[in-house]
Amino acid sequence: MLKMKGWGWLALLLGTLMGTAFARRSQDLHCGACRALVDELEWEIAQVDPKKTIQMGSFRINPDGSQSVVEVPYARSEAHLTELLEEVCDRMKEYGEQIDPSTHRKNYVRVVGRNGESSELDLQGIRIDSDISGTLKFACESIVEEYEDELIEFFSREADNVKDKLCSKRTDLCDHALHISHDEL
Image 1: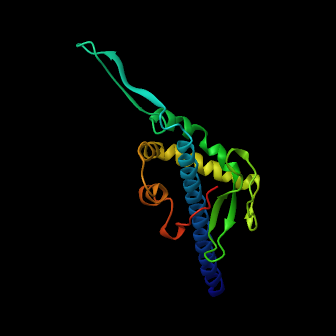
Image 2 (image 1 turned 90 degrees about the vertical axis):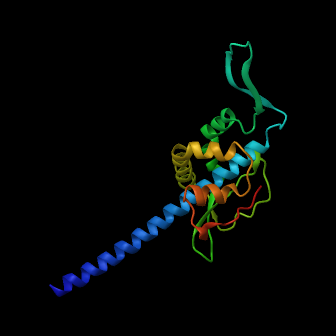
Image 3 (image 1 turned 180 degrees about the horizontal axis):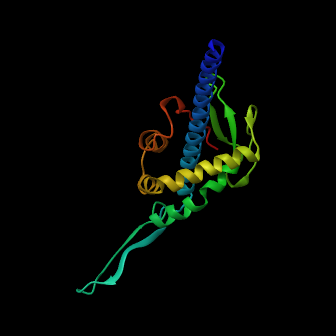
């Protein structure tokens, strides 16, 4: 009977350790997906001509004959951001997985240059395969679905440190140990 108790404690300890490792892997994945999502959205917004505008408001005629329509910059409009959120997770196939040698935490980095151009990337230590990109895409889609309103709110106006504010403080997807800067392409 004593031997069974010893094995029970060992099984409990192993189960706890494995659960902790799984939770950390899951947090690494969701944090990495959030940070990649922010990178992609920021890049896409920057590609839009700042002079391009879209009409927003009511198209109904007021009793005085006027309309409540305003022109807003297209890049950060709700219409443009909604369109970007529908397709941004497809770009997760352009990311690979890298293990930080000091923390042993997973980090996700862009492995394909913007617009498909080739660049001199150092891919040493980066795992690239369809399982990684598929898992990252699924995590990205989950984040977009769960936090769509927050994403639109954050990106509708310019802000500094969006990754930290959105991925750590607002959504709690990243902990403070995961504030790893990604090499931008």
